[in-house]
Each structure stands twice: as structure tokens, then as C-alpha cells.
Amino acid sequence: MQPSLLRSITAYPSHLLKGILLVLPLVGRAQGYVEGISVSYERLPLHLKTPENTAFHADVFRASAIVPVVQAADSSHSFLAGASLELLHFAGSRPGFEAGAVYGLSPIVGYRQRLSERLEITALALPALNSDLREVRGEDITWGGVVRAAYRHGPRRAYRLTVGYRQQFYGPQYVLLLGFDWRLGQRWRAFGDLPTSLTLSYAVVPGTSIGFNLIGINTAYRLRAADQYVQYQQGHYGGFIEKCLSAHWVLRATVAYAVTRRIEVYARDQQWPATLDYIGLGKAPTPASPAVEKGAAFKLGLSYRVPSK
Image (cartoon, rainbow, N blue to C red; front, side):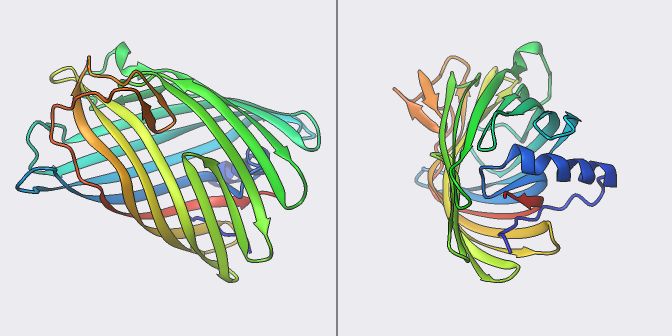
């Protein structure tokens, strides 16, 4: 059985699940699996880089869904629509960090075209509203998009290239991802989009897998109070265990360590010259709040997943 990450959304209607069943094999032919619906919770114990080593923590909630709204009868092309939601809640004592919570709201609109039996192109528009929602203005909305080419080399190997651009409050963010999906025998599978994601999975028994993964994050949220923003940048390396609850629903628990971590407040004029995915390029901006230490992260996720062919 393919490794599957389960993230629960039991309240979604059955017609939405049927739509996801249709779109998932189309959107993700060149990756280990595709998640049409997902929700997750992550706990980030944090410590400040100060002599007192003050404790501070963040709770991160995420949910997303994507479905085809128009699809060709032969599945050669389809229009895609969806949305993702995010909430970061901060608690604890931290000088210069007045944000109690920030939110991310992003509609997803896209188009997929199969050019041949082995090659397909997908384009996604990714507008986003990232802020504390205290006073929403037009400038809180950022724009971006990506284009992905996926090529299936054979039954056990596939490759993809993703390029794109996104406005960020910390400066321009360029996207360049090199993806692959390798089936390494009956139990092993490796796939990801480097440098932001990598998964190595081993099927211990049917329906249960363990493995290693890398997740890179780099986004930002506007704070209205003092015209500042929060940058959330992390590179998580960790181990996971996941259990198939049914043919498509999968539950995953992850314990990770952040080798890169920035959760700091910056003035609006403090920006990176540019970033490539989650890696900052050039001179780093100066934060208005104390930096946080590297450390652990704990995540529980539930998703509706369809393995790629």
C-alpha cells in the first residue's frame, strides 16, 4: 500500500470528495501522492536568543482543498479551484513581539494540460491575504503564481520542474523547485521538490509507514499596529510515522528539528534583497524582536490522499 498522510475533514460533503478523486491523479501524476483535502496542527516550542532564554511557543493550524471545476471528458485538461487557510497563534513573553495571531487566506486557481502520455503542464495563480486581520487593506494582498512541468520517465521514475514568483512582505520570492518521484522496490519510495520538500518512506507493514522528511517554509504576515510584518522561515528535518485509516485517509505524526528558524518582527523597510524558495539571498534584514533558537517541532496531520500511478 502506498504511504498516505491522513488529514481529517469529515464535514466536507461527498460531492467534494468525489471531485477530489477526479482531480488528484491529474494534478499529481509525478509525485508520491496528492492531497486533495488536508488539515494539520503543529506545535513549535520556542526559546529566545537572550540570556534569560525565555520560553515562547506557537500553535500552527492549516487546512486546504482543491477540486476540478471544469474537466475534459478524456481528462486531458482541467480547470482547478481551491483554497488554503492558516492560523499561527503565539503565546508567552517576548519583547518586541506584539503579534498574538496572524492568518493566511489563499484562494487557488489553476489549469492543467496533458501534452502527451508522459508530459503535462500545470499553472496555478496564488493570491494571498496574510495579516493579523486587525485592519485589512489592499496592500495586505500579495500576488504570485507557479508553472510546473511533470514528466514520467517510466513506471518507477518521474521528474518535474516548478518555476514561479511571489510577492512577500520581506521582499521578492523566486520559486525554483526540482522534483522527483522514485519507487525503490516494494517498500521504499523517495519523492520531493528540492530544496523545500523531501520524503523518504518505508512501508513497514501494509497500511503503516515510517520515514524521513524535509519541509522548508518561508512566508510573512503584515501587522497593522506599527506597520511591521512577521517572517516565518523554517527548515524542518524530521521523522514520521503514518497510518492508513482507510483506502485514502491517512494520519501522520511527525517529530522534527528546525535547522533554520526565523519567527521575528521586522519594520516594513527591512527586507531581503531576494529569496529563492525558503533561502534568503543577500544581507539579512534586522529584526525588531529577539531571534529564536533552533529547536523541535511536533506535527499531526490528516489528509485525503490518492497515490500517483
